[in-house]
Amino acid sequence: MIDMTSFRRPTPLETLAARYLNERRGKAAYRGAPPAGQAAAKILRPLSLKFGPGTDRLAEHWSEIVGDRLAGWSAPEAIRGGTLYIIAKGPAGALIEADAPRILERLKTLSGPSAPGRLRVKQGNPGSAGPGSQRNVSREVKKDMSVGVEIDPDARLSSALKRFERANERRERGD
Image 1 (cartoon, one colour):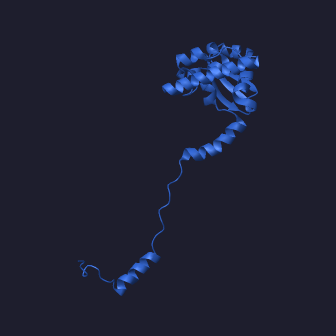
Image 2 (cartoon, one colour):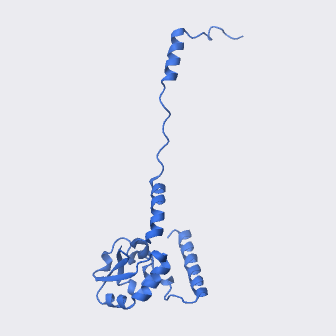
Image 3 (cartoon, helix red, strand yellow):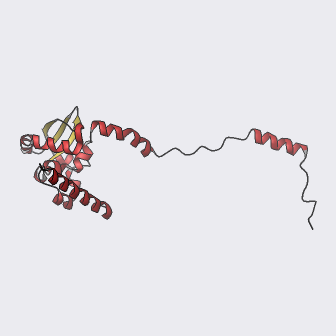
């Protein structure tokens, strides 16, 4: 049998109190803010397409752009007003300036139409170029970088696919 003493009717005061609380109850908690990375990506992606890569991205691919020999003596410093500023050690600046057309062509291949159109070379110590400098690139990556810009479209495609394959292998290894 059911005990009827446990089921009692609420008093009018309890009913009024329950109605009062239901009418004035606070709003539900807000959902947390979205990750800042998502908001930044929405803003930065169109800007990077419009204005081209930053010096960090150029530093990652620096030995591919200027070649292994010059990459050890130089580093990208800044991009301002369509000009890439390079810091180079000693006479490497003259070699970079002599090689400017080839370097600009490679920059255009990497960056597209928003690539810098001019180079300015400053003598200094490229090791102080920042955290993305050439010294952070592993030996395996240096070894695999291509030496020249391919003129033939098939050779360019083949080279790009090889670089893509190496990048995927490095990503899978966790490098």
